[in-house]
Length: 334
Image: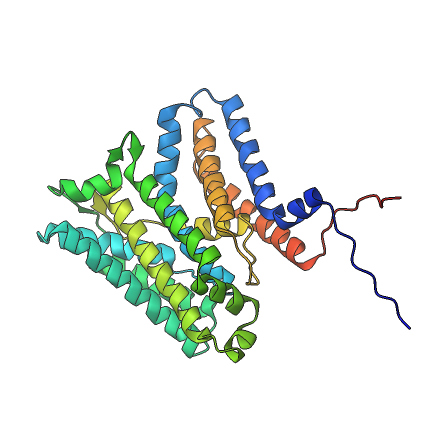
């Protein structure tokens, strides 16, 4: 007769490191980058530069939080940069017509939700791969922005309330950063404490199993693209308010930075696992690297090379971590 014994309890420290390996690794990398730029430049740790970094990182963080939900379901949204540009341009055009800015903000968020849901509908209900749908969206939305602006930048004049969204400060802290922090906290609360967050993770882990236990799996998939659309619209509004203009050339390469931030933060590209805290750290790492390279007087074009290398490295590490059984080997008690 077989004898069964209880599994030995692992070391609490080892279990903690295994469970939070991705977040701890990106946190270490982020701190290492900060230390490097603090040593090599005189201005990196100044208050003005730090506030500039968080202000510029705000739009990326907002969309990265939404992208975390998308990638947790096993999907991807390549159209976020083009949607940012479209909202950026349309908002500037409508504001130049004299439409009240609060109404414009609401309308642009609704537009982002509509576009996001349409893409989600194709992915969830029509079975078209997310890569194909959003790649098409990337081209269509950017082309629409170019058509509406004819390639010109549209200035936003005499709308101080709207400009405050992008340039204002509260107790010395940039408004865009406060908005981004609020979005990150909301995303963390949703994915960790709500029924919807648990359903997103379940659908990403096994969509068919989630459907069989009664979850609205297709709606969950469609909804994360709707969330990404709203987040992209908000980012487009922040960029328009900060720059004081709308342009179809805004947010070029934005989707690469967003995906890099999410994957670098430890969210699994295979779905079923993600962390908002990791996404925040990944976003700040990307922002710090871009800022630090500029302060070191390195060509800004080199930032694209670094970002691409980070994406490749992050995907490689992501795949290795989630496909291998990492564990700490501890000495057995005698």
